Length: 144
Image: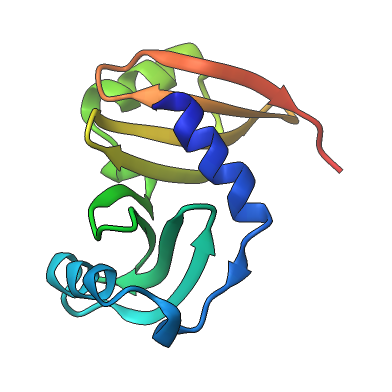
């Protein structure tokens, strides 16, 4: 699943925007059922998946669907105080006094995790934070 998400991320950068009328009606019906009230919907074809970028309840989100209309991945931007308490405590313990840059909540069939970007002492990091507070893929990134 990890490779799948990384592949989607890579393909996302190379995706061509699809016209809404080009999207499979099953996918559009599945989207409408899952995300009633979504606004500013934009579609893109990402490899073998269709991706909807949209705003729901005031939050930016993305949803990837398989060709048969199955929801595969949902990603949404969240605030720090929306993280689970265990994840917040773990982050504060491992990296005190950070400045959060971005938190993306990623939900798949195998569970939910958080891709985070933050700064600490003028160093920028990206990491994956799990609901239980464990970290994976912590890496320092260069700042411009």
